[in-house]
Image: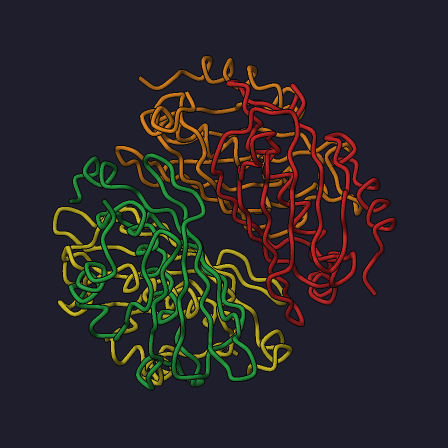
Length: 143
Length: 143
Length: 143
Length: 143
């Protein structure tokens, strides 16, 4: 049975890297997840844009949690593709992700990184991900 | 003219996100770059593995610097694909990257994330990246 | 100025590979394109599913035409990512694609390969693509 | 036990799409595979370059056969990423692929599409692929 929003928040808080970078779960369910990620001065590259690794973290976590909301908490990301569409100058991002396809072993999820703007939200990046279910991870001797 | 190793180290140090995560350039030149990235307790997920976002940061930076060693410092990553091959339990990674193809506008680079082991290095992830040269960035109104 | 549906059909018919494989444009405009691709016995692999290369062709063409509907006919695909979600057993596919982001040099498009079913269409694959505009191609000395 | 070169040739010949497009296996083994793919007039796009779908087919097949040389013949491609580096004007390609990582459920392979030139071979495209082993496919109800 998939975790609840509260359980997902506990799982997120159990990630030291997420505590370091400061992410929060706004929404978590089989219809998708939304992660709110601050973009602090420490998260930028030399031109003041959010660092690509900052975007990668947000996408990776949202993609994985979206799978977890359908398949339970034990999936591991087998990899992802991210397309950066626009530089992020503001101080926060929304990472929205949802399941595109749920197979017995693999799940494909999609993520949109959105920079909220008063004049209309801006799509900053899109990402896709393949997540292996628990049995796959057990098979790899990872879990 | 591409930057020197010293100039590249200055550029890396100018990235607040890299200072936060603590990366160092071991090697930088047209033949490729090597980034040394510590994997601290704060960089892990809930099972103690290096967080996928930690790997994504290392790959993104190595991929971009590899392009910079050929094309100068102003490129921006248009996106990347990362395949995670094995979980990282140790306390450091080497991110090696080099140019596969250098066009007039776009550069394709490849990265290997390697976990050093006394018994033999382990390939933890591979990544690929397309980087836009300066003129492209100017075209986007980014630079 | 982007081509009309009739002009796009002429461009498609000018591709020998598309004549060989037999694709037709149902729809073509800035809101997206739809390509109808037959899946003949000659387009299958050894298990009777549509060959991955058949899917790749359909995605590649739809992704590129979607960019062409916004940016004109001269773009070339810099690469694409395809995720195969379900095997295709039927005798035709719809390849729908649209622009996600249109920069001055690069365009990102998305494609869905759909197998029509009386009981409901089935999503067979998703794909993403980065397309370089003409100036980029000219820069490469390609056009 | 992985198939022999002769068995792999039989498998390739059993693919109607490969018969249509005319591929031949030069080499097949755990160290990698090489596929020779003609680029006929019928395989081109409107500018005379090999069609992106032609490249996708070659990459897809080489990537999958490289996995098959390690894991047996029943894998199915879960998707691939291809970066096109240079247009192909000549009349044949070599598709070389090999295994990067072989897990219990998933295999990652890499492919290089090479256009042979008297003055030196040219790297036309690179591709990567995740292939699911038989049990995964059985799990999907595909095999």
